[in-house]
Length: 249
Image (cartoon, rainbow, N blue to C red):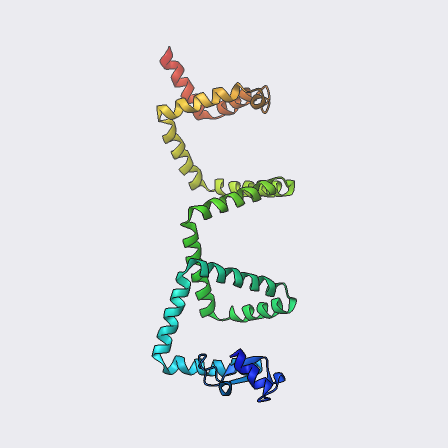
């Protein structure tokens, strides 16, 4: 079609300024006769093809079938998928660097989110995509690594540590202020301590901790004395040990 176009220009069939697109009048790319080639502007060329494509989609089942087959063959090739993905990514990055494009897309998205069916479709698609991602071990490892790095960075900030401590303390106080929760934890604890293996493990851990000077330094010298006095203030404790003493005698 380039040769046919050159012949038309040389014979003044049309001028070069008529347009930069070499268009096949009968839409047959194999028909490169000079009388089947014309120069038109890009907008007009796009309009012609849009109209003929729309008509074929509605009236030519064979065209739709071949189009689907070609599309499936293309996307079945990993190299072509990667190439198309890279090209689309490059275009998106270029577009989003432009202020006018960002403002336009921001408005488009804002209007779209006003439609319940759009919100539902996007939410469901995002949920499904996230489920599929979590099935991949490499995604789990990546997210775990990113979280670890982010947390390490945050914990270096004293304000963040104070904030978490405050939130944790308030949450703990709220939970433990519930009598049902305290009763539940008490039952669980008593059940655990009925297990000889658990008791021995706790005793061993406690002994190891008290061998550490740093651990001991956290408690005052009269720590155990205060604990004992607190226990003996409870009538039940005094009664329990009184009964034990009677049995020993």
